Length: 184
Image 1 (cartoon, rainbow, N blue to C red):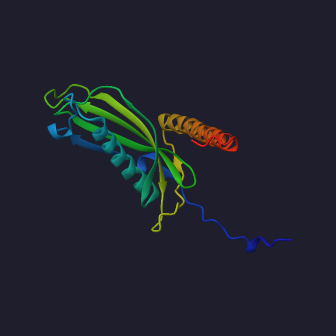
Image 2: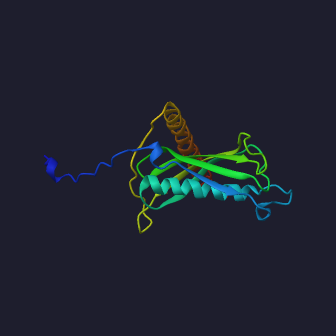
Image 3: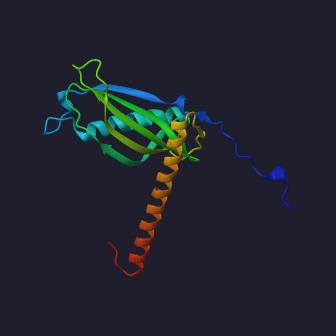
């Protein structure tokens, strides 16, 4: 029989509320950020999204975190030179070592003070907390505070389930093709 005192104990990490790591990153778009059509390049917006999400993941996990996946990125409106972008990010869900970060991007025209900002993009990213050697490390659970936070947590669970099912299906297809000698 195993003595319970011989089993190593995994430290329990206390949870953190969603508001503990929520941030808003603001950036004015310049001519340097434009594409051939004269609007802001989607890659520029994606970098700001990744920057904000990384800051939130690092704050929540109290250390370095790396981008594991960009689950979804939707561009809803064009962004123009002079727009003030606000990139709002928060941790929606946590696993053992990973976190889903939701990001909303809104824009205000530089010359239209007082007008409401327009949502121009949204994204969901998965970050993995890493230690000094780059190995995954535990993250504190996120504690939803509001009804909206709880909805985001539930939706993140659905996205995670779909990500894992998609990965399993792709790996199974690859195994089948390899067994048939149909290496791609």
